[in-house]
Figure 1 (tube, rainbow, N blue to C red):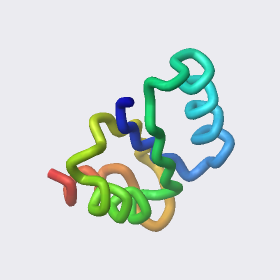
Figure 2 (cartoon, rainbow, N blue to C red):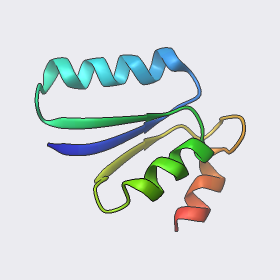
Figure 3 (tube, rainbow, N blue to C red):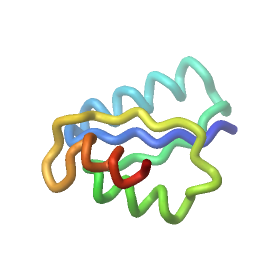
Figure 4 (tube, one colour):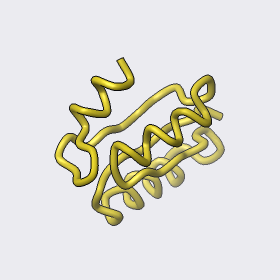
Length: 73
């Protein structure tokens, strides 16, 4: 399974993307969900060596995508 982190402040977008991937590619993705950059950093810290792909919204409250990217870099 490919570990994937989906980061978006809109729950409907997170859930829709996750549902589409699960439906189209069953048993291929282990999906982590985060509602902002701060939450994504926590997930990434805990699963750093596991996550292969991040789908990231740029405009979010708490911590935006640009700040997240600068901290991860």
